Amino acid sequence: MSIAQELGVDAEVVLYIKTPPDAATLRSIIAKLEAPVTDLVRRDSMWKKLGLTDDDVRTADQVVAVLVKHKQLLQRPVVVTADRAIIGRPKERVRELLS
Image (cartoon, rainbow, N blue to C red; front, side):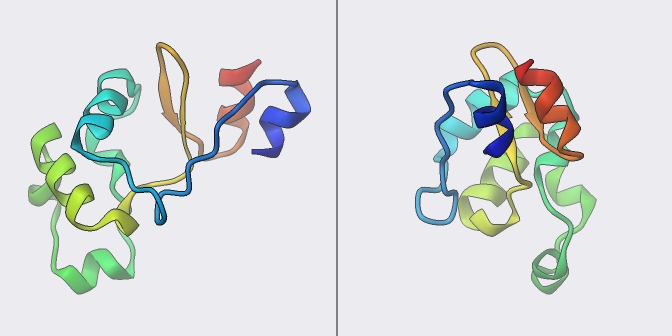
């Protein structure tokens, strides 16, 4: 989180592979998320390998279930403040949120 350091903002970095968010944490993030909930799920080679489709992640419950089971599909970075959560792509969004 070099942007947080540049701005002098205290930040906790969570390494999602070592410490994946549980269902309650994901629901907390979703409650604050400004983007559609489905945007939390990466559509990459793992997505294709698992045979997932957009129909599998239409609702918050579906997104939580997929991300609890397949933590590597979590879009990143996700930046969470007390009242907002964003997907930090492009990275300028992180700067805007923390400024």
